[in-house]
Length: 149
Image 1 (tube, helix red, strand yellow):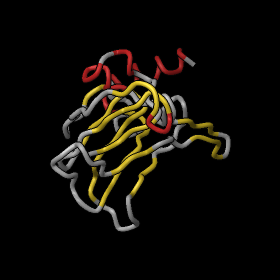
Image 2: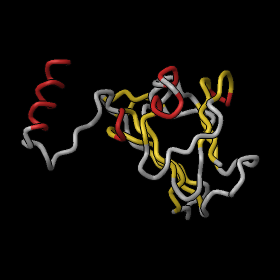
Image 3: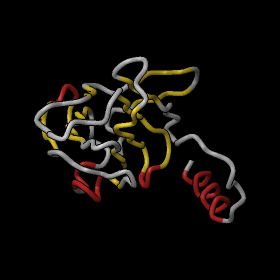
Image 4: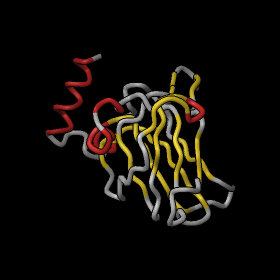
């Protein structure tokens, strides 16, 4: 599998697959979580690979986030996992990069249901960043729940 990824990386760097989008190695699916069915304001997007690449989870609300962090505008206690056809996907412990939007910040938790260690409120900005760049390498690939404010 590593050889196949290396071949794809070389081909992409040469511009041979510029218009193609590849599924991440884990074959995760992208999901959008909305506070209501009409929610259209992007608050947070997290990716399963560094540098804002791969599959993502998007979190949308009906308004921008509030100006304070003592209230929570949106939360996710557990991430999706399961099997879709022949693809196995599991978002638990799989977040590597993030971007936040519309005045939102995010707090990550090591375990589901907002348990164990937490990052404190982090502003990734609309340009986004790798999790390790904002909160340290220890947080790569261990995030299991989050709150948005």
